[in-house]
Amino acid sequence: MADKLTVATILKPQGIRGEIKVKVLCDGADDLADVKRVFIDGVEYSVMGFRGQGEVAFIALKGVFDRNAAELLRGKDIQVYKSEMPALPEGRYYIADLTGCKVVAASGEVIGEVIAVTPARTDIYTLATESGSVSFAAAEGVIESVDIQNKLITVNKKRFKEVSV
Image (spheres, rainbow, N blue to C red):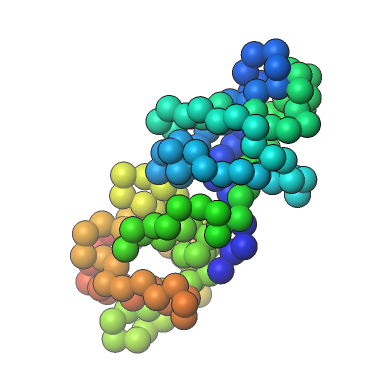
């Protein structure tokens, strides 16, 4: 399991005092409200101020005091320690935990390995298989079980074939 999670991407400076506007990659900005430190390019920053609304948040970081310093961060990802994020409800998983999972049919047949998950109304999983990459929507009835500890996702093969490309 990943130690750090990418939770936001810096869009631009906000104002003249070094605040940054970020696109939140979590369920919503509220998920980041209690984060006290973040990492950008491996550098740790203390969070001095936070306000969020929907998929966007405005963050003030210690050491980023003006617009010029904030501009240098444009386009970079923000990471946090997974242990500092709120607990997920049952049946929800971090993308970092799903990446690298082996996908198997209920019969035990290996289908592939998760190489990416694209968040959407119905998440899109991309697998590396023997014959190339395959994508499938995590539509109802496709995924039967997820075992993060053993890095294993079991799918209903019939439904998988219906939604995969």
